[in-house]
Image (cartoon, rainbow, N blue to C red):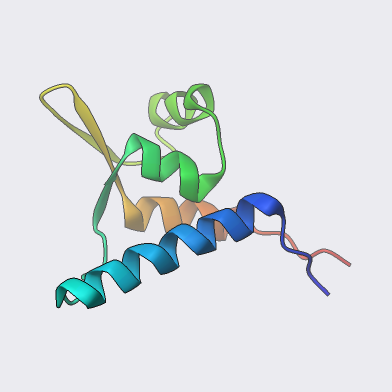
Length: 88
């Protein structure tokens, strides 16, 4: 049995609100290919410093446009997959 943390519930709520808002607007949600730092931190559940370390150590692919950093969702998903653990 897995327990959801308060942060997990907050993230799910935000995703549901975002999707319902898009449906109300008549927009079809598109899969995210690149996300800004705030969204990457939210998905990974990490601090700005950890995100910077992931960037500097080549753990996450990123792109910088102007002063904004974008992170590859594929890279984020791969990082999560590589670090998943089975809890017994």
